[in-house]
Image (cartoon, rainbow, N blue to C red; front, top):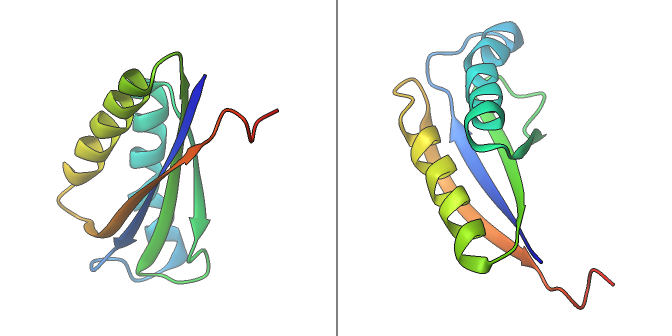
Length: 99
């Protein structure tokens, strides 16, 4: 079993309210969930209008498969011109830690 999390920090330059922020990140979250079958959540900067930290998690039978899923998710997020990716990082759950 291989579990990994991709955390992406976003800057939302065109957003002027929390409602507009929600409208900007919902297509990213729902699209990733639907297209790539990952678990998703906004995990940081929740009270800031122009920042958001999103997390995407996957579990796969091989490390390669998990890596490919998160690569596709990262490309998907980059495809949104209204957001700027500040940083992206991954972490892996060691199989021994899970037991």
